[in-house]
Each structure stands twice: as structure tokens, then as C-alpha cells.
Amino acid sequence: MRGGERCLEVLCELFPEAPLFTLLHVPGSTTPVIERRRIVTSFVQRLPRAAERYRHALPLFPLAARRFDLTGYDLIVSMSHCVAKGVRVPPGALHLSYCFTPMRYVWDLYAHYVDARAGLATRLLAPPVAAALRRWDRRTASVQSFAAISHHIADRIRRVYGREADVIYPPVDVARFRVAEAVDDYYLVVSALSPYKRVDLAVEAANRLGRRLLVVGTGPEAERLQALAGPTVSFRGWRPDAEVAELYARCRALLFPAVEDFGITPLEAAAAGRPTIALERGGALETMVGLDAGEPPTAVFFREQSVESLVAAIRAFEAAEDRFDPKALRARAERFDRPVFKQRLSAWIGARWRESRRGPLC
Image (cartoon, rainbow, N blue to C red):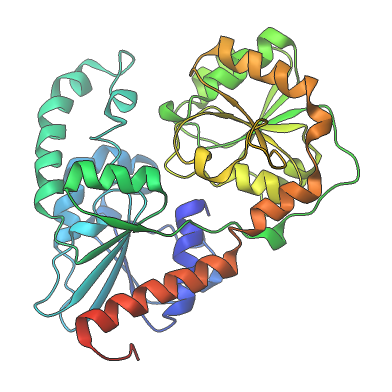
């Protein structure tokens, strides 16, 4: 249940009888709101070890999405960071896309997925496969209306697809979090351990400063990051929501070194009354408030995606730690609360439906 799944849960609440079409589903991996509906999976589901090795099937994803039979539906809402927006839409149907990002594997973050550490076969095959996927991605951008998760992504949609997009920020479930009376002496990372997340910067900064760091998450970078870690860094893997909420509440600050499409974790930290030390790029600029913004701060920003810049930001945070007010942090998170997202998503879908049908969405 990461950010995309939490958006999907709200969509499922808005349309409780609608079936869900997805490339792959691991039963029991999401909430009952999602699990109890009819879930239609693609042939990717039947590939050997699909749940662990689905990334290797990336070249097949467009075919899998295009083979979904949506005959008989007059409204299709896709939530996509990869190929879902490329489904075949029946004549006369309205297709709305809540876009997490154009396919990140082949656009802005391509270099993070295919770097010097990739195997020879990957380095040889990746360029032509990526080029083919980029052509497909542009060709199948036949969505009537896009909504983006941030202005950062709206700009990417404009650049990649030549289309405009409304912006609806994803939700943070503020009720999941509490503000602790006292905090412990550790920094926190909550992240998938993927190359573009740059968790290595947080690990190396903690090593250099001798600060205690807890890393929550799993992913393909886990082994490499553990090899980098010094004695003050520990890895917790994926933890239950309640435990993660408690880790947020008691940390000194969240470390956030990635260029994120939106970035839900700084808002989760804020909901628990804790600040973030964030890279000054991407979605964090739309949700966090820096030290010099003229209003109660929620973050310390650093400009360069480097260990040195992050180390300097941690030191700057420690010098200004008493400026962060837990109540102001939580108030900031409440601007992005789950009910706010649900209302805005519902209003957007209803407005686009009325524009296309000149009638109410029943």
C-alpha cells in the first residue's frame, strides 16, 4: 500500500461496484476495499514468478494492457505510472487518466534504471526497447482528459504527450498518524529501495556524520545499500502501517533525497509532526515549506543530489531544529488529507463526465 495504491483505494470507494483491471495482483497485498471487488488480471499474472520478477516483463506490458476487453463500459478511469493509460477504449466511452507520471522507466528516469551496474544484456537491449516503448507511449495517449499528481508531473505530461493536465494532489491519511510528546535520536527513510530513490545518499550522509538512521523499505537496491551502511544505519524492511506511523512520530526528521513525482512520505512525516530534509526538486517543492518561506517551516531543502549537500542540510536542520512546530507541520499535512483528495477526484470525474455527456454521472 504505497501512494498509488492509496489513491486507488479512494477511487474504489467512489465506484464500489466497478471492476478493477490490473496487470498483476498479489492477493492479500492491499486493503479490503480493493480486495473485495472483481479484479481482472492480464497474462502477466500467469508468467513464472510474476510477483517477484514482473519488472523483467516490461516489454510485454503494452500488449497486456491492450488485451483488456472493456466492451460495454462508458467510463474508464485509469491510474497509471506505466501502461494503464494505453488501454483500448470502446467507441463512445470516456477515458480519464489520473497520471502518476508518464512511463518513468523510459523517460526522465531511464538512466537510473539502466546504468553501469546493469548486466551486459540489459545495456544492449534497453536502448531499442526503450525507444519502442516511448513511441508506443506517445501513440496511445488517447485519453480525453488527464489529471496529474503534481505540477511537476503536469509539466512532464505536457513535454512528453503535448497535453495539458489538471492537478489533483494525492492523499495523506492524516488520521493514521499521531504527534509524539518526545522524539528519539534517529533520522528516518521510508522508501522503496530503487536506484532513483537515492537512498544511498542518506546512508552515506549518516555514515559521515555518525548519525543514527533507520531505513524502512525493500527493493532491488537493498543488498548494495546494506553493504554501504556503517554501524549507525539499520534496515527494517517493510513494516506494518501502524509501526511506520510510530517510527515517523519519534524520528528527528525524514530524509528525502529523491526527485519525486509527488512524494507522499514528507506529508506522512508532517502528519506525525516531524519535518523533512528534502532535495529541492520535484514534488517536494509543492508540499513542503522551507526555512526562509515566511511561514512556519516544514522542511530544510538541499540543492545538489550529493552526499556533501545532504550532510550540510542535516547540519542546518540541527542548528534550526527548534523552529519546527509539530502543530504547524500537522496543519500542513491536513491540506492534503484523504477527504480533500476524495472530494477533488470525485468533482473532477463528475465535471469531465458532464462535459462529455451533458448529464449527471449516475
